[in-house]
Image (cartoon, rainbow, N blue to C red; front, side):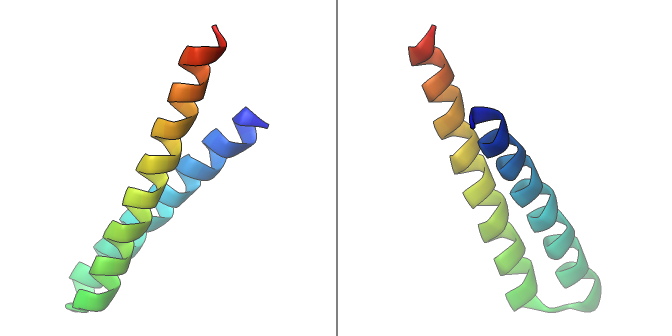
Amino acid sequence: MAENEKAKAKTEQAKGKAKETAGRAVGNERMTAEGRAEQAKGDARQAKEKMKDIFRH
């Protein structure tokens, strides 16, 4: 299950980065902000999984 969560985190980060880049390219500030938010969500999920790994070992 942890691998699945790590994959979700990476996917959210990549999706957010793409959305942010697209938003900047077309000048859409809302899309840029949404992309940043998705990246932050992915970062938080990844940090949570890393903490779980630390306490498992």
